[in-house]
Figure 1 (cartoon, helix red, strand yellow):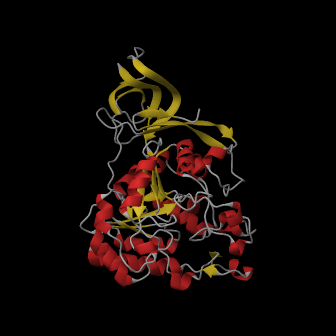
Figure 2: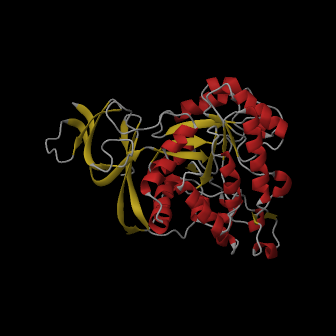
Figure 3: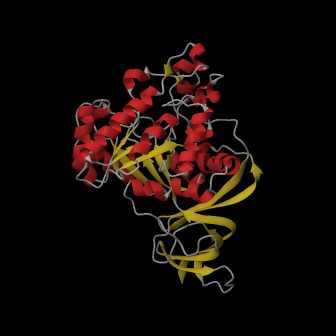
Length: 427
């Protein structure tokens, strides 16, 4: 007898012979054992049957570059809440940035977090700071952290600025199966900018960030990575200017990029009324840049979509725009929002969206890709298309509430995930 049978679901997995076919999936001990066509009315016995008529089943999604709330920022959120938020949006995996307090940079703390999250429904992966206290000056014990399970290295929201440190970091990472993740921001001309520089925003009286802050650092990162020949992931790409620069480096497989979902959904018009919800780091760009990013993803010029879920407390957000901390909370509805704005409104292929939120990220991080086929691990996301439905906030998603409150009705609903050998859903 099988442990689970997921019946009457339609597979969306371009690597599977069952792609776009409605099937029954049989799972035993966390592994897909058998797939049969839904026309087969003789269902085999299973301890638990999940009727999934009308749903799509895809390889599990990865929430990439999420803020780490513990330790130090428990007043913003908890790891359990972030896991609930990921489940609500159909993610089976989370990759956390190391910018907790203190910064995640030693093996003991890394192992403690791995132990703390092992019973959550979501697989949690942790990046570690590449330099001590993420200050960009002295390298951490990279090999030790790597051997203890660090999935990648980054100083997160405080990216390295000095070329010498960048080159040394890339040299130390090169012998491992890991990579450096870096935000392309040059702080020398970032000026702690509150808004993107444009003819409209120059009259606002706020510090503005020029596009040059991104493109200048991007060129430095590309030069250092190609000089050392070491893997680097650059995220988030937010401007069309950066996309033009990246075209020269298409042939370098060890250079990968992503943008973040917020830069595909909103543009700089969102901050014209000084709503601090939309104060981000880097700042939102114009609609022309947003459309260029969407097209670059369709053309595979950008490899993946990050989910830079960043809860902030009321005290950190409900202040004057200039003094509010950057960051937005959106993990609980990331997939429905992406489907609504990208697929429905911008004709973004659904299969492409699933790949950019899933296996493309796994390839970047050297994680096993997920293919829905007998003999493979069952790590699955199930969702269905629905009539337009308003989003309903739940307290279990986060202690914070810095999410955009004027969301469109969603036409996609997550049914649940299969992960760690079990079925999980909000119901």
